[in-house]
Amino acid sequence: EGLEGQGEPRSRALPVDLMPDSLFRRAKTLREAATALRETHRNLSLLNSRKQQVRLSYRLTVIMVQRLVSTALPIPLGPLSLRSGSSSSCLWASELLYAQQKDMCQLLASVGQHLATAMAAIR
Image 1 (cartoon, rainbow, N blue to C red):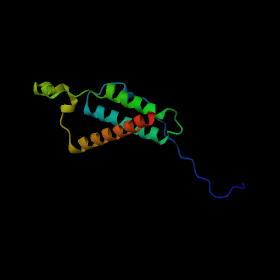
Image 2 (cartoon, rainbow, N blue to C red):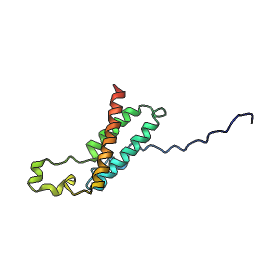
Image 3 (cartoon, helix red, strand yellow):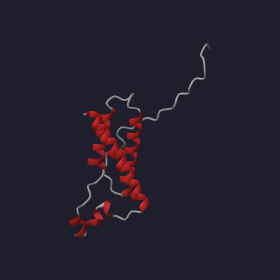
């Protein structure tokens, strides 16, 4: 065909779900909270890898993290509330395995890095 060399196959791009269902409902269990964190992390990573194709990707990142923190993840109860015996209503007071703690901390740190990068780019 007159072309020199091998053509590179096109990679299949995964779609970015900007607002997954897990971001629209409050997590009632640790599994739901971890799912919301994991989906947000996945979508932020996809969005970051396609920032040239997606307009306003940094603003979308801020909106996604804001939705995660304000809607999906419940606010932890304070130490006085936990001492008074209402720890059964706080999902963050439940027992976690070390692997679960590590996974959630890594996801939170990564989401925080995405947010910091997006905030620095917006300014």
